[in-house]
Image (spheres, rainbow, N blue to C red):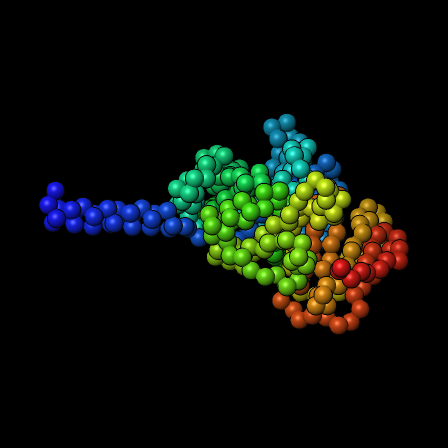
Length: 324
């Protein structure tokens, strides 16, 4: 081979490598959290919790062929939902999966496959009309990738089922226990393109928590180190999701008033913690056992005393605690 030919071959190899690298790194947009899916034992009480207690709307539901209810959809905003599955939990806690939405489902699938991520299923349309496929992260969490479609039920119900009294209009983050912490962080950071950032109102970072924001939006995931020896603590900090609120004090006061209605059977403890920077973090559990955080993500730190930490039908006295 002459020197001239050798130079041409080298140039061609460089061009092919460059094109291949472009294909591998050309990640489509991942815009935010679309929904969280929760397994519930008592669909009616959990539905009442989200609708009557937290004030959300229910735009639609799905039924089995025998007419029994299967999935109830709770609307947070036009792009975010909570899906309540009347199913026995399959593994782990009640939070069964969460979904991310993209503007190019086919390209996202191709991109993930180019990075060695094998989808659990092919792209297909759900009964609500939106297309999706699912993957597993290194810890086994089910992650659904969704694209909202024209004519889907979510599109057709835009502008409706958004009560003014709902406690929140935004799912801010999803928290996941991770046993394979390094591998799971690399998956979200290096494969999906999430951005690591410091969440100043989260639990102290010496616990090893990692917060990663979606590449093309503001929603994020919290990765929580988990080992069997820390089971008691991990139960308290288990897989969860967070709802953004503009005024935690007002939200808790409103929930205390709603909790006085004994006929609603919505007695739930609300725990209020004050962080190192005087920020508030409110936690509660729905009837399925899923932990829900209420968070003020953008407001300045409060200096006044937080509200009572417990609400129930009888409103017993409660307290607040400082994070250690």
